[in-house]
Length: 178
Image (cartoon, rainbow, N blue to C red):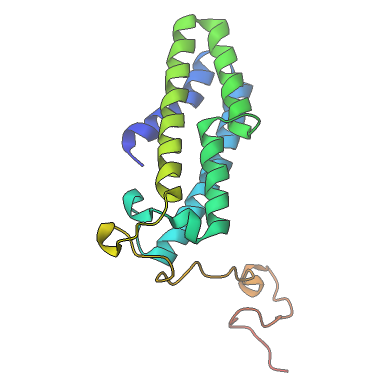
């Protein structure tokens, strides 16, 4: 993600605050944070599985790793502002508060929303493209990637304020024998 895109996405919170839409900006902040968290988790899973974070090298990753691909697709479409997803409602609130203040602010907000949608759809397009027939075309063929590791239970032993009984789901330093 480029620095310019981060500025465009942060512009919605600033636009909301500047136009008096504090509730709209707070909604945008919460929805944006939740969406980006999911996208970063998907990117991290692909980084672990495929060993790359470069968008062109992730060609076909959503087809190879369907669960992560589905989560990434929902996140990208949410970031693009597709109705009825959370950022659509949040951006609509921000744009409504900007329109009430000034049509110029509304136009800038609309342009920022369009740029965010284009970047999101571009990322989704890369990861959903079919894998090339030729392995030399930029990515590895299907089946050669080690795969996304299965989810592990949280290490409850180290997260608890008092040592709970260890369920043996994680190598805990306080695991009791027997």
